[in-house]
Structures are given as C-alpha cells and as structure tokens.
Length: 308
Image 1: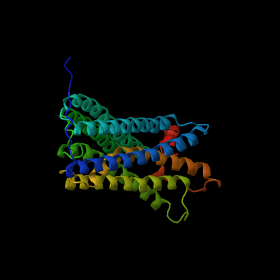
Image 2 (image 1 turned 90 degrees about the vertical axis):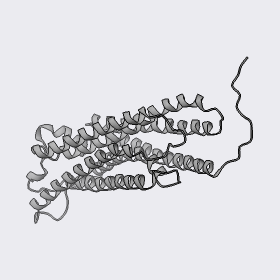
Image 3 (image 1 turned 45 degrees about the vertical axis):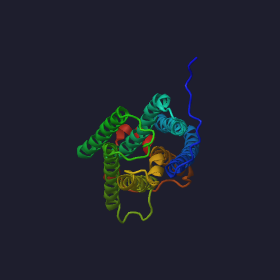
Image 4 (image 1 turned 60 degrees about the horizontal axis):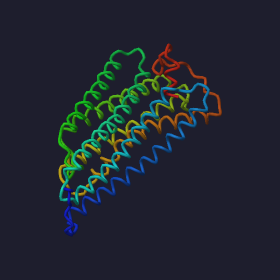
C-alpha cells in the first residue's frame, strides 16, 4: 500500500526560520491581546445598551457583527499560522496548499468586513450631523462607495493570487486600493464632524462656557476620528517602507492589529457615549438652539441610535 512518506532528515533552524517563528509568535500575541480588549468592550457595551428601555438595535447589530468577524478572523489566522508552520518543515507542501487557500478566503473576507463596517459607522455618525446639506452627504456617499469598491476589488485581487506560504507578511502594492479609500473616508468624515462642531461653537460663543452632552459626544467623535486616521497613516507608511521585504519589522504587528483596531474603535465609542449618558446626573443646560448642531427631526430616534 502506497503511503506518503515525509523526510525524517534533521533540518536545523536557519536564521530565516527563526525570523518566521518570531513573526508568528508576535503576530499571534498582539492579535489575541487586541481581541481580548475588543471582546471586553463588546460585553460591557452590550450590557449597558441592553439595560436601556430604547434599545438601539442597529448599534447592537453593528458591534455584534464586528465582534463576530473579529472572532472568525482570530480563529482562522491562528489556524493559518499553525498550518503554515507545519508546511515549512515538510519536504512535501502540496497537501497544505488547498488548506491555506481555504483559510485565506475566510481571513480576507473577515478582515475586510470589519474595515467596511467600521467605515460605515463613521460615515453614519457624520451623516446625521448634516441633515440638510447635499454637498456633505454627497461627499460621504462618494467616500463610502469608494471604500466598498476598494474593499471588494482588493479582496478579489488578493484571493485570485496564489497563496505564498513563505511570504504571508509582505505588503503588496495593490493593497493601496484598500488602504487609501478607507483612509480618505475617515479623513472626510472626521473633517465634516469638525466643521460642524466649529460652526456650532461659533454660534454658541458667549452663551455658555461649559459643553453640553451633545457637544461632548461630538468632541469624542472628533478626537477618536483623528486617532483612527493617524493609525491608518502609520500603517500605510510602515507597510510601504518596511513591508516589501522579509525583515522582521513593525508591519507584521500592524497587519495583525488592523482588523481588531477597526472593531475596537466603534465599540469603544458606543460604550463611552452610553456610559456618559448614564452618568449624566445633572439636567442638560438650557441653551438656545443652534442651527449648526441640528439633527434631522424626522430621524430623531435613528440619530440617538448612533450619537447617544
């Protein structure tokens, strides 16, 4: 009976093998750490939201989907690394190719699903601040459509390529089709949120020195948006400068952290805003209405869904 026989010849670890093992360990450690952070935030946010009488179902669905895709991504990524590790030390690696391809499909889809859902949340938050401005809405629609097209094209392009089990941590130049639309979408949404807040503060100048609850929410959106945009800029710079070779670099860490950061960002916002709303003991300040911080009246319930 014919059986597949692997070579039992002793193969000492070369420096490149040690390098690959280091990347696997570092990537797995960072990914599991950030996944734990996201799950903790998700459980806390879900607990707070479920205690509200007006349960925001769309918000709960969004953070639940982010958590689901992060879970799928972590499980597949760890499995991918284990299979890849086994393939590295076999004289016959053809039996691992199909497994790696199947795992790569799930990994690519779950990563990019988190990216797009996170962008959709950011665009929606900016959208409700500009209820009557067609130009602002047109910019946001164009940005989110660009993100969708970039995610789909880059994902299909990635899956059509052969899985290189020894080049998993490189930064292919076509990934710019994914990164640039996501970055531009977040920059545009953050700028629109900042412009709206600036208009409002100018209108309210001299009325009150303290910020209302709505203003604090806008400031939180603005600050977190800048931090998230900065993360994508750093990822892009590190990927372009150090992701083209096999040298142990920070890109391996950023590559593992991206989908978790995309899940942590909106989940943290939901939790922070929900806790701020629960912790507000004093009644809101009575201030004159501002046309620059006016939400769509006919969509008040949906606005509260995301802003509060």
